[in-house]
Image 1 (tube, rainbow, N blue to C red):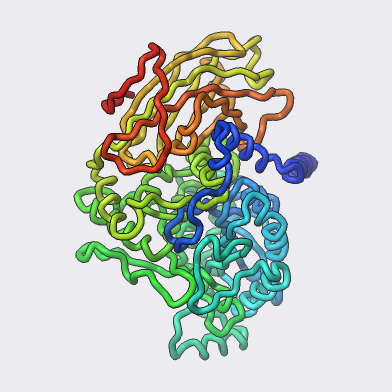
Image 2 (cartoon, one colour):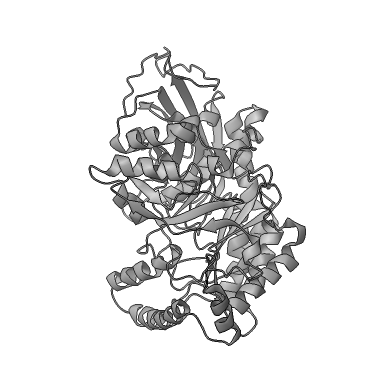
Length: 564
């Protein structure tokens, strides 16, 4: 218990010092290389919210794995300080009059819903002033839903967005607001009967089924801790159904919560014959959204029908928000590659943001949302908005997009470590580089040679690659100590959005730890020196200011035939 308390205290102090915010700010400043416009919000923020990628999280309230960790307000406030704009809370009736947040059917602890809302209020606009979307996986009956509504109104006050017909639904119009995302029960003859059953204390059938399955899942989880990982994966897959909204309770129209739902979560079904999702997105006020698992998106994108399905996803995302969440087998809070989802136009690509070792997907996400002044909203490129989106998504899955740019990356060197490796006097350092974030044909991996026994490795290593969608590309740099005996030691990460980082000259990027904050003092202040050259094809329409950087040999390379 003492260890847990100590860890909690350290995390609270880290947040009080705004370490996550300051680390992202330092990386953003370094990436800008003196260009102040990159450091600030510079994209058009008045477009419909469906035109933006939005920094999103999954089961935000957990501080570790998906089965046994703690539900804590500190996890929510950490995510918000990291720049997350979409926070997820799983809500359950805790007593006759209160609501708790927990991962139902697991051994994760409970936390008061009111404490979670207090964390949102405290940290919502520390990293960004743009809207926070609070997505509720709502398993509460009518009284619990009313408690949620009353708590939101009382604690958030004027910061709570209350939808009105015909309002503008853009990041600019919603600045400084917390927007509620939840399912809403459709109007029909059963609404009054539903309310009457709730008033009498009789649960709807779906809610009864959930409670029964939750008990069974809890028993299975408890016994499963001593069983195989395969059993735990099977449990995770069952729990993942909740994320899609399949077991959560729709909010009755007569409840106080229904009036607060600005983003309506609807269930969609893919019609393969029509190559379209039903129902189509659209509404009088607010915006529609839907939830798809990473497995569903991957399945749709496979085979001969993959390009058509990707086009359908992009078309749906023109008027609605698509949330993608991790598969049920990720009980360790690992993550999937968000790149294919971004390439299909999905806006809310939700990742587990609990710190885990070597989380390439989370590093990639952190780099993507350094763009546009770290505000958590990145405008999708024109080819992924409106009528253009379907054709791009189709080509991304088919991997038939034409090259529009050539990227050259030079890893110059690094310095600044004072600790963090094994017993050797100095580490044996290599740098791993990954270009991702867009279509599969743009993904490139590169590794420098290892420089032995040094605190200041010098590589001067260059690689080149063509890109079809440079606006989507993120470059992730990871430094490691090569240790064949005990396993390689992580020495830091820096991820940057290509089109903004490529505006400057030589960049000196601070390397962050696995928590995406600065390393502790004993580790030092490591810096990685890199050069990025992005050269657009002559006929590529683009407004970026590009530069030419000499290669190691000293000559500018005009070729678009990149090599990796």
